[in-house]
Image (cartoon, helix red, strand yellow):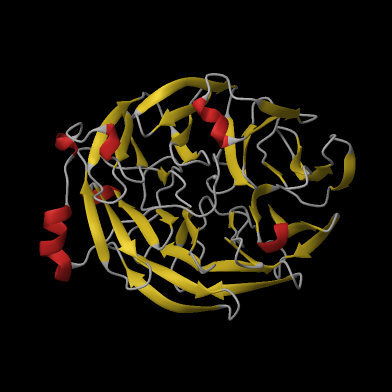
Length: 396
């Protein structure tokens, strides 16, 4: 999820993130809608609409997804990450000891826990949720509807060796998962529903991240391109440069094209890339788009029509038409910012749900809801502490 490549990310449900907005013209409207963490608890659980979860140092704010008011501050020590659980109630929380389940409707952590060292990527696809535990190499698969039970029914698969990996189960039961060890990651393996090997490819150095596009085409990132799996065949798509690392991707069921990051400097302590990649899973072609501004590994998202969205350090959401391979418009949201060297440090992040982009603004201790069609700010939430990661429940 990285100093972009070495980060343990609990991954990504593809479609949801956050960002902060500065638009003085809407000041009066924002003032009416702005809330403070001091008001937490004044709303009942029944009043929470489409909840969001925002991490901070010491806990997780649960927000009303419409007003952005803090409903409750759930205490939780340590550095924690959040991802959609796949239903309209729960959020997955990656802690130091494993994956925990936050019930946003009741604003409390449940007793359900998937234990294991170094919890990593979280993926949703075809009505299932997949967890990858890096410290054990274990893949856990469940129906998110089962999270209402004290002991959800799960299917598991354990990799040959623990590593920072990811897995996605397709509609037909096939499992696409990464290959590697703690020291070297090298490719992917595809298993059938009985977990017998169908195919593999070990020509993907530093394999990282996944995204699923239209017609269940799966893209997995490498430091020299990507691996594409579809129709029971793995294809390597090379980067246009000798070193062209794609480690973070976002897909959409409405588009054959996957959005990816793109880094070209192998020696950089922290590269601040200004180009993103577009991987066409129908043609097998990879192209680059120059944004003219840098971004971070938390900057990628997809819109409701399959638009590719990138939150730049210029404070704008860059809306890319994936078919044309060009930026179609930009939406000003926050002030200019600079990605911190420490990947755990807060920086503006984008989470998209429906036609709304939620953007955090750590320095201002705010979060904004932005209409992706008009670019206007619909609501503002204000906190006592700096917001870090943001996610939400699934509403569609």
